[in-house]
Image 1 (tube, rainbow, N blue to C red):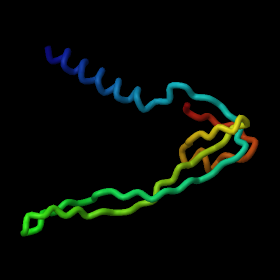
Image 2 (image 1 turned 30 degrees about the vertical axis):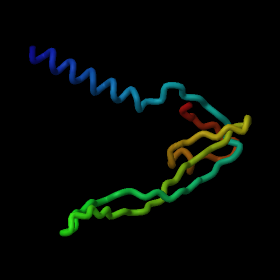
Image 3 (image 1 turned 60 degrees about the vertical axis):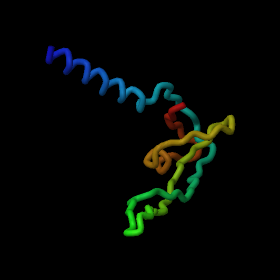
Amino acid sequence: MRALVVLLAAGVLLAGCAEVACRDPQTVVVTDKRDDMRVETRVIDTRVEPSGRVREQREQFVIHDYLVKDPSDRWYRVPEPTWRAAKIGDSVTVCR
């Protein structure tokens, strides 16, 4: 019985990893690349004041989207190391 529970748990964990893996990798030729930045705000702490009011402490941070463009003018998001290494005319593997 215990072995069955362990096998089920392992199956659930491995199925979760499958969601993160690239299902349709594709190689494209880089014709352009760009770094899009945006500012996002997230709640880092919540406190209750003596009066009962809930106060959120927020933090702003910069999000980078590293993008490469293929010859058909389609943009793909890639990891930072891939983006930094990519040169115009190089082939890179992207996830669709």
